Each structure stands twice: as structure tokens, then as C-alpha cells.
Image (cartoon, rainbow, N blue to C red; front, side, top):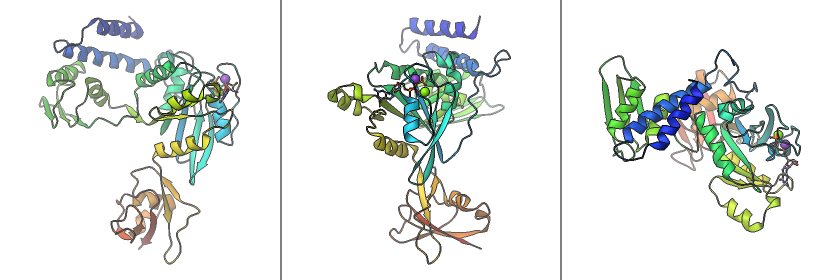
Amino acid sequence: MGVLEKIKQIEEEMARTQKNKATEYHLGLLKAKLARYRQQLLEPTSKSGKAGEGFDVQKSGDARVALIGFPSVGKSTLLSKMTNTVSESAAYEFTTLTAIPGVMEYHGARIQLLDLPGIVEGASQGRGRGRQVVSVAKTADLIIIMLDATKSLEQKHLLEVELDTVGVRLNKTKPDVVFKQKPAGGITLNTTVKLTKMDEKTVRTVLAGYKIHNCDVMIREDITVDEFIDVLLGNRKYIPCLYVLNKIDGISLEEVDRLAHQRNTVVISCEMGLNLDYLVERIWEMLGLVKVYTKKRGAHPDLEDPICMRKGSTIEDVCHGIHKSLAANFRYALVWGKSSKFSPHAQKVGLTHLVQDEDVVSIFTK
Ligand SMILES: Nc1nc2c(ncn2[C@@H]2O[C@H](COP(=O)(O)OP(=O)(O)OP(=O)(O)O)[C@@H](O)[C@H]2O)c(=O)[nH]1
Ligand SMILES: [K+]
Ligand SMILES: [Mg+2]
């Protein structure tokens, strides 16, 4: 039996099985199996060595944003509007056949926007170029799910399912679970919170399903069995996602207003240039980039050329952003701004100090 058939069988069995306390651990086992088979789907086989590989596009700039959507929702039109790259757009489906990178500049950051071929339902199972597209999505710092506002928003759910299947978790944080395998000693299971969505027996059943007999597990969040499986598999990607509804020139104002209020959603019209500035702001915000200004002793901060970094960056990252050898000769730094304990005055800090957006930093070397 092929993997696809096995998956189908399990899904059918799950659909047949009533959800209740008595079947909970059996369902957990089925889910574990299902995840394992789906995993296999993504692994390259000898027949199709290319499966699971993405398009070969160099990452560039400070962050990467991938445009995912059904055909002809306007992905290429958006790329051409927002960057200096032109990507062919047309009224027929599958105009774009490969990944086309463009660069947007904003607040001194260079953000790579990646136009991709349209995908269809079943993409993750290898239909069309879907698998390549979804693997590129995994490399993004932000995924834009682009939708046609004049069409049914059921599309949104279908795309979420495709990404979920390849292990991309949208707008979710990594479950707060410590999991360590060990050579012997059995299973040690600890929880710091009350588990209401699964019980300990389910946890043990799932571990057995993965043939894990020796490990330490510390669960610090009230997670579901799916989230627990994610932890075991360990290769899930937690990526922020912005839903962009295009072509609002084709719907009523009332409808626009209703759609605009949905979570993580921006409504636009590429054709009429509506709301594109706001879209850039939201992209920036969701990327959580941080810009830091540097200042030489006795001089004003350099506001022209900030250093752009990921949220969670440290003074050490700032050093690397300035010069390769700077961290090695580092003595101390002075920071002004949100991360300074003594704001508006400077704080003297070391390499591990976390910087915040719009901090001003002076580095002192040996
Ligand atoms: N009415 C309207 N049409 C738009 C808008 N944006 C794009 N279009 C049209 O939609 C069609 C598809 O646009 P594309 O940019 O090729 O869409 P795509 O998502 O890149 O399509 P594929 O590459 O085939 O997946 C073109 O005819 C565009 O002119 C918009 O805001 N409003
Ligand atoms: K098109
Ligand atoms: Mg296109």
C-alpha cells in the first residue's frame, strides 16, 4: 500500500471514531501515525529526487516574505507594485512558473518579497509545483496568504491546510515543552500546568507510537495532542502570517469594511493602488524587525543608516552588523532608548544585552 492510501485509511478511521474520553488515546495514536506518514510524503524518494526541494532563490536582505495564493489572485501584480522587479501578470492562471524575488526598502531595511507560482488544493501532496512552493514558504520570515476578495474565502482555509501539512504553523508560538531523549531510564513525565486537552496516558501512547521509550518530558503549557506531536517531530516551523485580500475594487464598501476587521488581515487593491502603504507598515510590524542607530563618541547618532536586525538581537549582533572583528575587541557599549534601564539616559551594557527598536548604541573597544 502506498503512503497516500495509508494516510487516507487513517483519516477515514479517525473520521469514524467518536471523540470521547475512551477513544482519546487511540485517536492520539492515529494522529501520531498520520503525522509520520505525511512526513514521509515530503522526504525525497529515489524516483523524484527533487520532491520537497524549493526553488533555488538566494536569500537576501534583512528578511524574506513569501507570497502564497491560488492562481491569479494578483501576487505578481503586487510584487511589481511594491518592488523594483517586474513579474509578469496576466488574466490566466499559472502565469508565474518560478520564484521571482524583489526587494522592498522600508525604514532602512531591505525586505525580500518572493513572488511564487499559484498553488491549488493538494499542493503539499505533490500537485503541480505546489510542493516546491510550500517548501519555499518554510524559508520565509513572514508568509503572506493572498486571496481574491471577490471570491469565496474558503480558499483561505485550504491554503492553511496545505501549509499545515508540510509542518508550517501559522501565527503560533512553539509549544512550551522540554523534550529530551536519553539512552535508558524510561519515561519521566512532568507537567507544570493542568492538562485539559489530553491526559498523561495519551502522552505515553503517542511516545510509544514513536517508539520512544526513554526520555524526559516537561510540559509547561496546556497543549493539545497535535502540539505534542509537533514537539516530538521537532521540525515544525512557526511563521507569522498576514492575510492579504486583493481586488477590493470589485466588492461593496460594506464588504470591504467587514473583511478589513478580520484578524491579521489587510485589504488592498493592487490595480487601484489602495491601501498599499498600510500593507508595508503591517509587513514591517509582523516581521518584528528592530533598527538600531549607531553613534560615535561625541557625535550625533547616524540616523541615515540604521542597522536592521531580528527581534531578540543583542549588542553582539549590533557589533557583527558594523564590522566582523568588532565583537572580539569589545569592551562595553552605551545604549540610549527603550532598552536602557535609565532612559532617557544611557546604560552601560555588555554583549548579551537585548536591544530594542530605535535604540542608539555606542560601542567602545579595547
Ligand atoms: N480588479 C482587479 N484585478 C486585479 C488586481 N490585481 C491584479 N488583478 C488582475 O488579476 C489578474 C491576475 O494577476 P496576476 O498578478 O497575474 O496574479 P497571480 O496571482 O500572480 O497569478 P499566477 O501567477 O497565475 O498564479 C491580472 O489580470 C491582474 O491585472 C486588483 O486589485 N483588482
Ligand atoms: K495570473
Ligand atoms: Mg503570478
